[in-house]
Image (cartoon, rainbow over all chains, first blue to last red):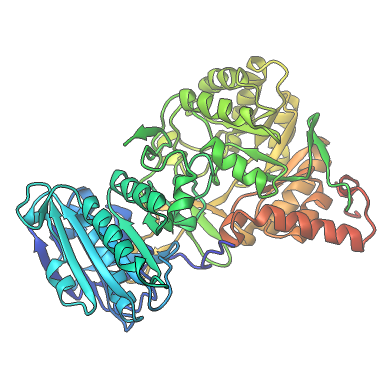
Length: 281
Length: 306
């Protein structure tokens, strides 16, 4: 049952630290016990500007969390102008988190800025005895995020693809996933028991659909992070409903089994805007 | 199991619970999901003739006592309504109430006529949204003359589709307005729209939390107000009513029926109990009927002793 927390008022928190990641991306650090899990999201509010859902780049579980934000619209540009000590409203965490078992083998596939929430997952999973293959894809080297941090995570192997080949392999990140699955199956052929592997994808929906298609064909478990226009974040406004299932992404997702996402005719195909009109990806 | 079915404005509902306008209700898929979850019927979000943007975020906050919302009635306009109604009708399993809205009194006729062509079971006229006052002024539901003028205009344009009017509690005498609207030809009422508007301030930033500053109040806090109004309007007009306001469990819904409601609107309860609330409440209502030896739930309508 989707029981919302019965208080969805914001808390306004001072920014503790700001880290510049790339010319257009900053990480904002807050000293607050968010009690979130990887895959969940929060609403970030700047009074008199806007409120938007954002993924969580890291939650220490000990009173600190990070948001890594690309300055792309009015609100995110305004946020980039803010300084340490300025207050930002936070609501949440909302939605469902990624699911895995301790000791699983985790393959993350991040497209563009999807790397940040997957870092959060890799940090948590490796603390739960998981091993991680961390695949990231970006347009070029200057758009890559979090690679230096990922390199420092134990039991984690980083794989990079860029469209222009400036770092890692040239092209999409999905061939790396296909190769990892093929290698895994080859290694497993001689063994009786294959370590349970789960693929987690965060990025543009067309990329996640490609990841899901691969996993579906290869019969590998997969979860994706579905993004839809959201107003409330807790299953009431109805803006983020998927066709034909009618489920709200904000409460039944964003993190969901790819088979659940594939039940929707919209997955990788179309999304709705602020007034509910449908647009193709 | 008790017989939960009711007839409202000549339309059969398998149970009295209907999704209230403004919650979920943007897509046909969402309606189907609500019906599968146990609702007896659904109400669309307010439909405009042309696109209406609504307010920036935040639009909604809530705690255990109440919800405050100023979504600002966003909608894509009539073309989207046509598509969603066609989708809904493909797999239709329960009645659909089309809620309509316009910015000027004179514009209600046209949207009503266009929506009537899509054959909804009932048209609900929203003249009582308290969070678009900056744009359109005081809601028409606050004036006897305005409210009845809108009702007459809509009735002229929709043929045989039953018309109900959603009233505002934010008036001196709702009974006077209800009587005027009844005389203008309304077939029933939906009581009540949200209360207020109200205001909530974030202490640390000293800012109003909703982008629209103020918003309509719904949720458990407003239930006694809604119950009282449903009782009064029902006694005064004898017209059927959708009782809406703070209903979150089966007992609340039965109380609304005893006050005089035929159908019970469920909106903010989706926040408290998820979309599963419809199935849960139906079970709770049925259980009460079993314990209290009520065979037909419709016998409870207006059964409060007075």
